[in-house]
Image (tube, rainbow, N blue to C red; front, side, top):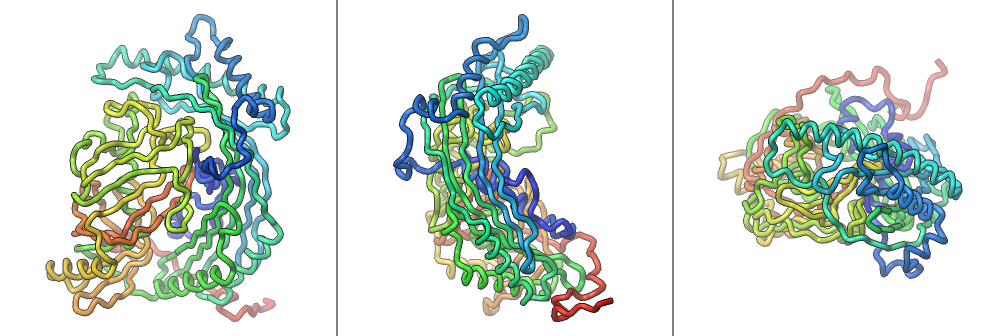
Length: 592
Protein backbone atom coordinates (compact mmCIF):
# COMPACT_ATOMS: atom_id res chain seq x y z
CA UNK A 1 0.00 0.00 0.00
CA UNK A 2 1.33 3.38 -0.86
CA UNK A 3 -0.37 6.58 0.14
CA UNK A 4 3.04 8.14 0.52
CA UNK A 5 5.75 7.19 2.87
CA UNK A 6 7.48 10.47 2.11
CA UNK A 7 4.53 12.64 3.03
CA UNK A 8 3.37 14.61 5.99
CA UNK A 9 4.00 12.57 9.03
CA UNK A 10 3.94 15.96 10.71
CA UNK A 11 0.17 16.41 10.74
CA UNK A 12 0.07 18.50 7.60
CA UNK A 13 2.62 21.14 8.54
CA UNK A 14 4.33 22.44 5.43
CA UNK A 15 8.10 22.72 5.57
CA UNK A 16 8.34 25.75 3.32
CA UNK A 17 9.35 28.99 5.07
CA UNK A 18 6.26 30.91 6.10
CA UNK A 19 7.70 34.09 4.63
CA UNK A 20 8.25 32.57 1.20
CA UNK A 21 7.23 34.98 -1.57
CA UNK A 22 4.18 34.15 -3.66
CA UNK A 23 6.19 33.24 -6.74
CA UNK A 24 8.43 30.93 -4.72
CA UNK A 25 5.40 29.26 -3.19
CA UNK A 26 4.04 28.54 -6.65
CA UNK A 27 7.27 26.92 -7.71
CA UNK A 28 7.69 24.86 -4.58
CA UNK A 29 7.18 21.11 -5.18
CA UNK A 30 3.73 20.38 -3.78
CA UNK A 31 3.58 19.38 -0.09
CA UNK A 32 7.20 18.33 -0.08
CA UNK A 33 7.54 18.58 3.59
CA UNK A 34 5.91 16.41 6.19
CA UNK A 35 5.12 12.84 6.64
CA UNK A 36 1.31 12.78 6.95
CA UNK A 37 -0.34 9.55 5.88
CA UNK A 38 1.14 9.89 2.55
CA UNK A 39 4.96 10.86 1.93
CA UNK A 40 7.04 8.66 3.96
CA UNK A 41 3.66 6.88 3.66
CA UNK A 42 2.88 6.52 -0.06
CA UNK A 43 6.38 5.39 -0.21
CA UNK A 44 6.55 3.85 3.23
CA UNK A 45 3.35 1.95 2.89
CA UNK A 46 4.69 0.05 -0.07
CA UNK A 47 5.86 -2.78 2.16
CA UNK A 48 9.14 -4.57 1.73
CA UNK A 49 9.35 -7.51 -0.66
CA UNK A 50 8.62 -10.86 0.96
CA UNK A 51 12.17 -12.13 0.52
CA UNK A 52 13.47 -9.18 2.54
CA UNK A 53 11.37 -10.13 5.57
CA UNK A 54 12.71 -13.31 7.20
CA UNK A 55 10.75 -12.67 10.40
CA UNK A 56 7.45 -12.38 8.58
CA UNK A 57 4.49 -13.88 10.41
CA UNK A 58 3.00 -16.43 8.09
CA UNK A 59 -0.68 -16.33 9.05
CA UNK A 60 -3.18 -13.59 9.81
CA UNK A 61 -4.56 -15.65 12.70
CA UNK A 62 -1.18 -15.50 14.46
CA UNK A 63 -1.19 -11.72 14.10
CA UNK A 64 -4.61 -11.49 15.77
CA UNK A 65 -3.07 -12.84 18.94
CA UNK A 66 0.05 -10.68 18.78
CA UNK A 67 -1.44 -7.42 17.47
CA UNK A 68 -4.18 -5.74 19.50
CA UNK A 69 -4.94 -3.24 16.74
CA UNK A 70 -5.44 -5.98 14.16
CA UNK A 71 -7.70 -7.93 16.52
CA UNK A 72 -9.81 -4.87 17.26
CA UNK A 73 -10.17 -4.11 13.55
CA UNK A 74 -11.30 -7.64 12.70
CA UNK A 75 -13.68 -8.02 15.64
CA UNK A 76 -15.41 -4.67 15.12
CA UNK A 77 -15.65 -5.40 11.40
CA UNK A 78 -17.34 -8.74 12.06
CA UNK A 79 -19.79 -7.18 14.53
CA UNK A 80 -20.67 -4.38 12.11
CA UNK A 81 -21.33 -6.77 9.24
CA UNK A 82 -23.66 -8.91 11.35
CA UNK A 83 -25.51 -6.28 13.41
CA UNK A 84 -25.28 -2.86 11.74
CA UNK A 85 -28.69 -1.81 10.39
CA UNK A 86 -30.93 1.24 10.61
CA UNK A 87 -34.59 0.24 10.95
CA UNK A 88 -35.78 -1.14 7.62
CA UNK A 89 -32.91 0.34 5.58
CA UNK A 90 -30.27 -1.67 3.77
CA UNK A 91 -27.52 -3.49 5.59
CA UNK A 92 -23.90 -3.07 4.51
CA UNK A 93 -22.81 -5.50 1.83
CA UNK A 94 -19.16 -4.49 2.23
CA UNK A 95 -17.06 -2.81 4.93
CA UNK A 96 -13.35 -2.00 4.85
CA UNK A 97 -11.25 -0.64 7.68
CA UNK A 98 -7.84 0.88 7.07
CA UNK A 99 -5.50 1.89 9.86
CA UNK A 100 -1.97 3.22 10.19
CA UNK A 101 0.56 3.59 12.94
CA UNK A 102 3.46 5.95 12.32
CA UNK A 103 6.60 6.80 14.21
CA UNK A 104 8.09 9.87 12.61
CA UNK A 105 10.90 12.36 12.98
CA UNK A 106 11.10 15.78 11.34
CA UNK A 107 13.86 18.37 11.52
CA UNK A 108 14.23 21.70 9.76
CA UNK A 109 17.24 24.02 9.79
CA UNK A 110 18.22 27.30 8.15
CA UNK A 111 21.58 29.14 8.09
CA UNK A 112 23.02 26.91 10.78
CA UNK A 113 20.10 27.18 13.19
CA UNK A 114 17.37 24.68 13.99
CA UNK A 115 13.83 25.74 13.14
CA UNK A 116 11.83 22.69 14.19
CA UNK A 117 12.38 19.27 15.74
CA UNK A 118 9.52 16.83 16.17
CA UNK A 119 9.38 13.15 17.10
CA UNK A 120 5.84 11.81 16.86
CA UNK A 121 3.83 8.64 17.17
CA UNK A 122 0.37 8.70 15.64
CA UNK A 123 -2.43 6.29 14.80
CA UNK A 124 -5.37 6.80 12.50
CA UNK A 125 -8.17 4.82 10.89
CA UNK A 126 -10.75 5.06 8.13
CA UNK A 127 -14.06 3.24 7.62
CA UNK A 128 -15.75 2.67 4.26
CA UNK A 129 -19.26 1.21 4.43
CA UNK A 130 -21.05 0.23 1.22
CA UNK A 131 -24.78 -0.44 1.15
CA UNK A 132 -26.84 -1.75 -1.75
CA UNK A 133 -24.93 -4.04 -4.08
CA UNK A 134 -21.85 -4.02 -6.32
CA UNK A 135 -24.03 -2.95 -9.24
CA UNK A 136 -25.49 0.02 -7.34
CA UNK A 137 -24.27 1.35 -4.02
CA UNK A 138 -23.79 4.63 -2.15
CA UNK A 139 -20.49 5.66 -3.74
CA UNK A 140 -19.61 7.83 -6.74
CA UNK A 141 -22.16 10.53 -6.03
CA UNK A 142 -21.47 13.80 -4.26
CA UNK A 143 -18.36 14.46 -2.22
CA UNK A 144 -18.81 11.92 0.53
CA UNK A 145 -15.85 9.77 1.50
CA UNK A 146 -14.88 7.34 4.22
CA UNK A 147 -15.20 8.36 7.85
CA UNK A 148 -11.79 8.85 9.42
CA UNK A 149 -10.26 9.76 12.74
CA UNK A 150 -7.43 9.32 15.23
CA UNK A 151 -6.96 6.07 17.12
CA UNK A 152 -5.65 5.79 20.70
CA UNK A 153 -1.91 5.19 20.96
CA UNK A 154 -2.30 2.65 23.73
CA UNK A 155 -3.05 -0.97 22.87
CA UNK A 156 -6.39 -0.70 24.60
CA UNK A 157 -8.63 -3.15 22.76
CA UNK A 158 -11.92 -1.68 23.99
CA UNK A 159 -10.95 1.94 23.32
CA UNK A 160 -9.78 1.13 19.79
CA UNK A 161 -13.04 -0.68 19.07
CA UNK A 162 -14.99 2.26 20.47
CA UNK A 163 -13.35 4.60 17.93
CA UNK A 164 -13.99 2.15 15.09
CA UNK A 165 -17.61 1.78 16.21
CA UNK A 166 -18.06 5.55 16.10
CA UNK A 167 -16.50 5.87 12.65
CA UNK A 168 -18.52 2.98 11.25
CA UNK A 169 -21.78 4.35 12.65
CA UNK A 170 -21.05 7.74 11.09
CA UNK A 171 -20.15 6.24 7.73
CA UNK A 172 -23.16 3.90 7.64
CA UNK A 173 -25.63 6.73 8.29
CA UNK A 174 -24.06 8.76 5.49
CA UNK A 175 -24.15 5.69 3.24
CA UNK A 176 -27.90 5.11 3.55
CA UNK A 177 -28.52 8.80 2.86
CA UNK A 178 -26.24 8.75 -0.17
CA UNK A 179 -27.83 5.68 -1.77
CA UNK A 180 -31.26 7.23 -1.33
CA UNK A 181 -30.09 10.36 -3.18
CA UNK A 182 -28.44 8.23 -5.84
CA UNK A 183 -31.53 6.13 -6.48
CA UNK A 184 -33.65 9.28 -6.79
CA UNK A 185 -31.13 10.79 -9.21
CA UNK A 186 -31.10 7.69 -11.41
CA UNK A 187 -34.91 7.56 -11.57
CA UNK A 188 -34.84 10.94 -13.31
CA UNK A 189 -31.87 10.30 -15.62
CA UNK A 190 -31.09 8.05 -18.54
CA UNK A 191 -27.48 6.93 -18.32
CA UNK A 192 -26.29 4.56 -21.00
CA UNK A 193 -23.91 1.75 -20.08
CA UNK A 194 -23.55 2.84 -16.46
CA UNK A 195 -20.84 0.62 -14.97
CA UNK A 196 -21.18 -1.20 -11.68
CA UNK A 197 -20.02 0.68 -8.61
CA UNK A 198 -17.69 -2.01 -7.27
CA UNK A 199 -15.90 -5.14 -8.43
CA UNK A 200 -14.70 -8.40 -6.96
CA UNK A 201 -11.16 -8.87 -5.70
CA UNK A 202 -9.44 -11.92 -4.28
CA UNK A 203 -9.04 -11.68 -0.49
CA UNK A 204 -5.45 -11.37 0.74
CA UNK A 205 -4.04 -12.58 4.05
CA UNK A 206 -0.52 -11.42 4.77
CA UNK A 207 1.07 -10.02 7.91
CA UNK A 208 4.50 -8.44 7.70
CA UNK A 209 6.69 -7.63 10.72
CA UNK A 210 6.10 -4.32 12.45
CA UNK A 211 8.68 -1.90 11.03
CA UNK A 212 11.46 -0.28 13.02
CA UNK A 213 13.71 2.60 12.05
CA UNK A 214 16.87 3.40 13.99
CA UNK A 215 17.08 7.20 13.99
CA UNK A 216 19.32 9.47 16.07
CA UNK A 217 17.47 12.79 16.30
CA UNK A 218 20.35 14.60 18.02
CA UNK A 219 22.95 13.49 15.47
CA UNK A 220 20.73 14.40 12.52
CA UNK A 221 19.94 17.78 14.08
CA UNK A 222 23.64 18.57 14.15
CA UNK A 223 24.02 17.41 10.55
CA UNK A 224 21.21 19.66 9.36
CA UNK A 225 22.66 22.64 11.21
CA UNK A 226 26.00 21.97 9.51
CA UNK A 227 24.44 21.53 6.06
CA UNK A 228 22.17 24.57 6.30
CA UNK A 229 25.08 26.76 7.45
CA UNK A 230 26.66 26.27 4.05
CA UNK A 231 24.33 28.89 2.60
CA UNK A 232 26.20 31.52 4.64
CA UNK A 233 28.89 31.15 1.98
CA UNK A 234 26.33 32.09 -0.70
CA UNK A 235 25.07 35.52 0.43
CA UNK A 236 23.02 36.11 -2.73
CA UNK A 237 20.57 33.37 -1.67
CA UNK A 238 17.56 35.05 -0.14
CA UNK A 239 16.04 32.09 1.72
CA UNK A 240 17.12 28.52 2.31
CA UNK A 241 16.05 25.51 4.31
CA UNK A 242 17.26 21.97 4.85
CA UNK A 243 14.40 19.68 5.87
CA UNK A 244 14.52 16.05 6.89
CA UNK A 245 11.69 13.60 7.48
CA UNK A 246 12.11 9.99 8.55
CA UNK A 247 9.86 7.35 9.96
CA UNK A 248 8.24 3.97 9.95
CA UNK A 249 4.66 3.05 9.20
CA UNK A 250 2.55 -0.04 9.72
CA UNK A 251 -0.57 -0.07 7.58
CA UNK A 252 -3.60 -2.31 7.99
CA UNK A 253 -6.41 -3.26 5.62
CA UNK A 254 -9.22 -5.56 6.71
CA UNK A 255 -12.49 -6.04 4.88
CA UNK A 256 -15.65 -8.13 4.96
CA UNK A 257 -14.44 -10.28 2.06
CA UNK A 258 -11.69 -11.75 4.22
CA UNK A 259 -8.66 -9.55 3.52
CA UNK A 260 -6.35 -9.34 6.54
CA UNK A 261 -3.30 -7.34 5.59
CA UNK A 262 -0.54 -5.63 7.54
CA UNK A 263 2.45 -4.13 5.76
CA UNK A 264 5.43 -2.28 7.19
CA UNK A 265 7.98 0.09 5.75
CA UNK A 266 10.57 2.72 6.64
CA UNK A 267 11.82 5.77 4.82
CA UNK A 268 13.87 8.95 4.98
CA UNK A 269 13.60 12.08 2.88
CA UNK A 270 16.06 14.99 2.82
CA UNK A 271 15.18 18.18 0.99
CA UNK A 272 17.29 21.29 0.37
CA UNK A 273 15.42 24.36 -0.80
CA UNK A 274 16.75 27.78 -1.83
CA UNK A 275 15.30 31.05 -3.15
CA UNK A 276 16.98 33.97 -4.90
CA UNK A 277 15.62 37.25 -6.23
CA UNK A 278 16.92 38.77 -9.45
CA UNK A 279 17.63 42.49 -9.68
CA UNK A 280 14.38 42.96 -11.61
CA UNK A 281 12.41 41.41 -8.73
CA UNK A 282 11.81 37.95 -10.21
CA UNK A 283 11.73 35.24 -7.53
CA UNK A 284 13.56 32.06 -8.54
CA UNK A 285 13.95 28.85 -6.59
CA UNK A 286 15.27 25.33 -6.85
CA UNK A 287 15.53 22.27 -4.62
CA UNK A 288 17.37 19.00 -4.09
CA UNK A 289 15.78 15.82 -2.79
CA UNK A 290 17.33 12.60 -1.51
CA UNK A 291 15.24 9.52 -0.74
CA UNK A 292 16.09 6.27 0.98
CA UNK A 293 14.58 3.47 2.98
CA UNK A 294 17.09 3.87 5.80
CA UNK A 295 19.23 6.79 7.06
CA UNK A 296 22.48 5.30 5.79
CA UNK A 297 21.19 5.61 2.21
CA UNK A 298 21.36 9.41 2.40
CA UNK A 299 24.72 10.66 0.97
CA UNK A 300 27.48 11.83 3.29
CA UNK A 301 28.06 15.46 4.16
CA UNK A 302 30.88 15.93 1.66
CA UNK A 303 28.60 15.07 -1.25
CA UNK A 304 25.65 16.99 0.18
CA UNK A 305 27.72 20.15 0.70
CA UNK A 306 29.00 19.91 -2.87
CA UNK A 307 25.40 19.59 -4.08
CA UNK A 308 24.38 22.63 -2.01
CA UNK A 309 27.22 24.67 -3.49
CA UNK A 310 26.18 23.65 -7.01
CA UNK A 311 22.54 24.51 -6.29
CA UNK A 312 23.46 27.97 -5.02
CA UNK A 313 25.81 28.70 -7.91
CA UNK A 314 23.17 27.70 -10.46
CA UNK A 315 20.60 29.97 -8.79
CA UNK A 316 23.02 32.90 -8.86
CA UNK A 317 23.66 32.28 -12.56
CA UNK A 318 19.93 32.00 -13.17
CA UNK A 319 19.24 35.34 -11.49
CA UNK A 320 21.80 36.96 -13.80
CA UNK A 321 20.49 35.26 -16.95
CA UNK A 322 18.49 37.20 -19.56
CA UNK A 323 14.72 36.84 -19.89
CA UNK A 324 13.53 35.12 -23.06
CA UNK A 325 10.43 36.90 -24.35
CA UNK A 326 8.98 34.04 -26.42
CA UNK A 327 9.90 30.87 -28.26
CA UNK A 328 8.22 28.54 -30.72
CA UNK A 329 10.10 25.52 -32.00
CA UNK A 330 11.67 22.19 -31.02
CA UNK A 331 12.21 21.61 -27.29
CA UNK A 332 14.47 19.03 -25.66
CA UNK A 333 13.48 17.94 -22.15
CA UNK A 334 16.21 16.34 -20.05
CA UNK A 335 15.06 13.16 -18.29
CA UNK A 336 14.08 14.92 -15.05
CA UNK A 337 11.97 17.47 -16.93
CA UNK A 338 10.55 14.73 -19.16
CA UNK A 339 9.27 13.05 -16.02
CA UNK A 340 7.31 16.20 -15.26
CA UNK A 341 5.93 16.23 -18.81
CA UNK A 342 4.58 12.68 -18.65
CA UNK A 343 3.28 13.21 -15.12
CA UNK A 344 1.33 16.27 -16.25
CA UNK A 345 0.09 15.21 -19.69
CA UNK A 346 -0.27 11.44 -19.37
CA UNK A 347 -0.54 10.23 -15.76
CA UNK A 348 -4.22 10.93 -15.08
CA UNK A 349 -5.27 9.90 -18.57
CA UNK A 350 -3.81 6.42 -18.06
CA UNK A 351 -6.11 5.83 -15.07
CA UNK A 352 -9.59 4.32 -15.40
CA UNK A 353 -11.86 6.41 -13.17
CA UNK A 354 -15.65 6.37 -13.26
CA UNK A 355 -17.40 9.64 -14.00
CA UNK A 356 -19.16 10.88 -10.82
CA UNK A 357 -22.93 10.94 -11.18
CA UNK A 358 -24.29 14.44 -11.47
CA UNK A 359 -21.00 15.85 -12.68
CA UNK A 360 -22.04 15.94 -16.35
CA UNK A 361 -20.24 18.62 -18.31
CA UNK A 362 -18.44 19.82 -15.17
CA UNK A 363 -16.02 16.91 -15.33
CA UNK A 364 -12.66 18.39 -16.32
CA UNK A 365 -10.36 15.43 -15.72
CA UNK A 366 -9.20 14.08 -19.05
CA UNK A 367 -9.43 10.33 -19.56
CA UNK A 368 -7.94 8.27 -22.35
CA UNK A 369 -10.45 5.43 -22.06
CA UNK A 370 -12.09 6.39 -25.34
CA UNK A 371 -8.68 6.14 -27.03
CA UNK A 372 -8.04 2.50 -26.14
CA UNK A 373 -6.74 0.85 -29.29
CA UNK A 374 -5.57 4.16 -30.77
CA UNK A 375 -2.11 5.67 -31.03
CA UNK A 376 -1.23 8.27 -28.39
CA UNK A 377 2.60 8.23 -28.63
CA UNK A 378 5.19 7.71 -31.37
CA UNK A 379 5.10 4.17 -32.77
CA UNK A 380 8.40 3.25 -31.16
CA UNK A 381 7.28 4.12 -27.60
CA UNK A 382 6.39 1.62 -24.88
CA UNK A 383 4.84 2.46 -21.50
CA UNK A 384 4.07 0.27 -18.50
CA UNK A 385 3.48 0.76 -14.79
CA UNK A 386 4.98 -1.55 -12.16
CA UNK A 387 4.82 -0.57 -8.46
CA UNK A 388 6.88 -3.54 -7.23
CA UNK A 389 10.55 -2.62 -7.88
CA UNK A 390 11.90 -0.50 -5.01
CA UNK A 391 14.58 1.35 -6.95
CA UNK A 392 15.87 2.18 -10.42
CA UNK A 393 19.58 2.66 -11.17
CA UNK A 394 20.26 3.14 -7.46
CA UNK A 395 17.47 5.71 -6.98
CA UNK A 396 14.72 4.87 -4.49
CA UNK A 397 11.28 4.98 -6.13
CA UNK A 398 8.74 7.01 -4.16
CA UNK A 399 5.80 5.30 -5.87
CA UNK A 400 6.75 1.70 -5.08
CA UNK A 401 4.47 -0.63 -3.08
CA UNK A 402 3.39 -4.28 -2.86
CA UNK A 403 -0.34 -3.85 -2.15
CA UNK A 404 -2.62 -0.96 -3.01
CA UNK A 405 -4.99 0.72 -0.55
CA UNK A 406 -7.74 -1.80 -1.28
CA UNK A 407 -5.48 -4.72 -0.41
CA UNK A 408 -5.06 -5.75 -4.04
CA UNK A 409 -1.56 -6.99 -4.97
CA UNK A 410 0.45 -4.59 -7.13
CA UNK A 411 0.95 -5.76 -10.71
CA UNK A 412 2.81 -4.72 -13.83
CA UNK A 413 0.42 -3.33 -16.42
CA UNK A 414 1.41 -2.82 -20.05
CA UNK A 415 -0.26 0.44 -21.06
CA UNK A 416 1.20 1.52 -24.41
CA UNK A 417 2.68 -0.84 -26.99
CA UNK A 418 4.23 0.57 -30.16
CA UNK A 419 2.55 3.87 -29.41
CA UNK A 420 -0.94 2.33 -29.13
CA UNK A 421 -2.94 2.57 -25.88
CA UNK A 422 -3.67 -1.00 -24.80
CA UNK A 423 -4.85 -0.81 -21.19
CA UNK A 424 -5.46 1.52 -18.23
CA UNK A 425 -4.60 1.42 -14.56
CA UNK A 426 -7.55 0.53 -12.37
CA UNK A 427 -8.92 0.29 -8.85
CA UNK A 428 -12.01 -1.65 -7.74
CA UNK A 429 -14.43 0.96 -9.07
CA UNK A 430 -15.21 -0.19 -12.65
CA UNK A 431 -15.59 2.03 -15.69
CA UNK A 432 -17.37 1.33 -18.96
CA UNK A 433 -14.40 -0.57 -20.40
CA UNK A 434 -12.26 -1.54 -17.38
CA UNK A 435 -14.03 -3.91 -15.02
CA UNK A 436 -11.46 -5.21 -12.52
CA UNK A 437 -8.66 -3.80 -10.38
CA UNK A 438 -5.05 -4.31 -11.38
CA UNK A 439 -3.66 -3.14 -8.05
CA UNK A 440 -3.47 0.62 -8.60
CA UNK A 441 -6.14 1.93 -6.22
CA UNK A 442 -4.77 4.55 -3.83
CA UNK A 443 -6.34 7.29 -1.72
CA UNK A 444 -4.34 9.66 0.47
CA UNK A 445 -5.26 10.17 4.13
CA UNK A 446 -7.87 7.37 4.20
CA UNK A 447 -9.74 8.76 1.19
CA UNK A 448 -11.58 6.55 -1.30
CA UNK A 449 -8.98 4.75 -3.41
CA UNK A 450 -8.98 5.53 -7.11
CA UNK A 451 -6.75 4.48 -9.98
CA UNK A 452 -3.37 6.22 -9.81
CA UNK A 453 0.00 5.72 -11.45
CA UNK A 454 2.73 4.35 -9.20
CA UNK A 455 5.99 3.77 -11.08
CA UNK A 456 5.53 4.63 -14.74
CA UNK A 457 8.21 3.42 -17.16
CA UNK A 458 8.57 5.07 -20.58
CA UNK A 459 10.98 3.84 -23.27
CA UNK A 460 11.69 4.30 -26.98
CA UNK A 461 12.74 1.34 -29.12
CA UNK A 462 14.58 3.76 -31.42
CA UNK A 463 16.43 5.55 -28.63
CA UNK A 464 19.67 7.36 -29.46
CA UNK A 465 22.59 8.57 -27.36
CA UNK A 466 22.28 11.91 -25.50
CA UNK A 467 24.78 13.49 -27.91
CA UNK A 468 22.78 12.30 -30.91
CA UNK A 469 19.56 13.60 -29.36
CA UNK A 470 21.10 17.05 -28.98
CA UNK A 471 22.20 16.92 -32.61
CA UNK A 472 18.61 16.11 -33.60
CA UNK A 473 17.45 19.14 -31.58
CA UNK A 474 19.87 21.41 -33.44
CA UNK A 475 18.92 19.92 -36.80
CA UNK A 476 15.19 20.38 -36.11
CA UNK A 477 15.79 24.03 -35.25
CA UNK A 478 17.94 24.48 -38.37
CA UNK A 479 15.16 23.07 -40.57
CA UNK A 480 12.76 25.59 -39.05
CA UNK A 481 15.15 28.44 -39.83
CA UNK A 482 15.70 29.22 -36.15
CA UNK A 483 18.81 30.76 -34.64
CA UNK A 484 18.56 28.55 -31.57
CA UNK A 485 16.58 25.70 -30.04
CA UNK A 486 15.56 25.24 -26.39
CA UNK A 487 16.65 22.66 -23.82
CA UNK A 488 14.81 22.30 -20.50
CA UNK A 489 16.96 20.85 -17.74
CA UNK A 490 14.42 21.11 -14.90
CA UNK A 491 10.92 22.44 -14.43
CA UNK A 492 8.08 22.85 -11.97
CA UNK A 493 5.20 20.45 -11.64
CA UNK A 494 2.26 21.13 -13.93
CA UNK A 495 -1.49 20.76 -13.75
CA UNK A 496 -4.01 19.61 -16.32
CA UNK A 497 -2.85 20.68 -19.78
CA UNK A 498 -0.48 23.32 -18.42
CA UNK A 499 3.11 22.24 -18.09
CA UNK A 500 5.06 23.69 -15.18
CA UNK A 501 7.35 26.61 -15.92
CA UNK A 502 11.00 25.85 -16.70
CA UNK A 503 13.47 26.34 -13.85
CA UNK A 504 16.68 25.89 -15.83
CA UNK A 505 16.28 26.45 -19.57
CA UNK A 506 19.01 26.95 -22.18
CA UNK A 507 19.19 28.35 -25.65
CA UNK A 508 21.08 25.88 -27.85
CA UNK A 509 22.56 27.78 -30.79
CA UNK A 510 22.31 26.17 -34.20
CA UNK A 511 25.64 27.60 -35.36
CA UNK A 512 27.90 25.85 -32.86
CA UNK A 513 25.76 24.02 -30.29
CA UNK A 514 26.78 26.33 -27.42
CA UNK A 515 24.26 26.95 -24.67
CA UNK A 516 23.04 30.08 -22.90
CA UNK A 517 20.95 30.04 -19.71
CA UNK A 518 17.64 31.97 -19.87
CA UNK A 519 14.78 32.55 -17.46
CA UNK A 520 11.25 33.88 -17.13
CA UNK A 521 9.37 31.48 -19.43
CA UNK A 522 6.11 29.60 -19.21
CA UNK A 523 4.46 27.12 -21.57
CA UNK A 524 1.25 27.82 -23.41
CA UNK A 525 -1.33 25.06 -22.82
CA UNK A 526 -0.31 21.69 -24.26
CA UNK A 527 -2.81 18.93 -25.04
CA UNK A 528 -2.12 15.22 -24.51
CA UNK A 529 -2.24 14.68 -28.28
CA UNK A 530 1.00 16.68 -28.53
CA UNK A 531 2.80 13.58 -27.21
CA UNK A 532 2.46 12.07 -30.69
CA UNK A 533 4.80 14.82 -31.90
CA UNK A 534 7.76 13.59 -29.90
CA UNK A 535 10.58 13.25 -32.42
CA UNK A 536 13.07 11.14 -30.47
CA UNK A 537 14.31 10.03 -27.06
CA UNK A 538 17.69 9.10 -25.65
CA UNK A 539 18.83 5.77 -24.21
CA UNK A 540 19.61 6.90 -20.65
CA UNK A 541 16.36 6.79 -18.63
CA UNK A 542 16.33 8.32 -15.16
CA UNK A 543 13.88 8.21 -12.26
CA UNK A 544 11.83 11.28 -11.38
CA UNK A 545 10.02 11.22 -8.01
CA UNK A 546 7.08 13.32 -6.93
CA UNK A 547 6.50 13.36 -3.18
CA UNK A 548 2.89 14.11 -2.26
CA UNK A 549 -0.05 12.56 -0.40
CA UNK A 550 0.04 9.90 -3.13
CA UNK A 551 3.66 9.73 -4.22
CA UNK A 552 4.67 8.52 -7.67
CA UNK A 553 7.69 7.89 -9.87
CA UNK A 554 8.24 8.32 -13.58
CA UNK A 555 11.19 6.58 -15.20
CA UNK A 556 11.81 8.16 -18.58
CA UNK A 557 14.55 9.14 -21.02
CA UNK A 558 15.12 12.66 -22.29
CA UNK A 559 12.63 13.49 -25.07
CA UNK A 560 12.58 15.87 -28.03
CA UNK A 561 9.34 17.59 -29.05
CA UNK A 562 8.92 18.79 -32.60
CA UNK A 563 7.23 22.05 -31.68
CA UNK A 564 6.10 23.79 -28.47
CA UNK A 565 5.35 27.40 -27.64
CA UNK A 566 6.56 29.39 -24.64
CA UNK A 567 6.16 33.00 -23.63
CA UNK A 568 7.41 35.37 -20.99
CA UNK A 569 5.94 34.80 -17.55
CA UNK A 570 2.97 37.04 -16.88
CA UNK A 571 3.36 38.07 -13.24
CA UNK A 572 3.83 41.09 -11.05
CA UNK A 573 7.33 41.29 -9.59
CA UNK A 574 8.15 42.29 -6.04
CA UNK A 575 10.81 44.89 -5.38
CA UNK A 576 14.08 43.58 -3.90
CA UNK A 577 14.62 44.03 -0.12
CA UNK A 578 15.47 47.55 0.99
CA UNK A 579 18.47 46.47 3.06
CA UNK A 580 21.07 43.89 2.24
CA UNK A 581 20.95 40.65 4.21
CA UNK A 582 23.43 40.18 7.09
CA UNK A 583 25.26 37.60 4.97
CA UNK A 584 25.69 40.11 2.13
CA UNK A 585 27.17 42.56 4.64
CA UNK A 586 29.67 39.99 5.87
CA UNK A 587 27.58 38.99 8.88
CA UNK A 588 28.20 42.34 10.68
CA UNK A 589 25.10 43.99 12.10
CA UNK A 590 24.77 47.48 13.49
CA UNK A 591 23.56 47.98 17.03
CA UNK A 592 21.01 50.40 15.64
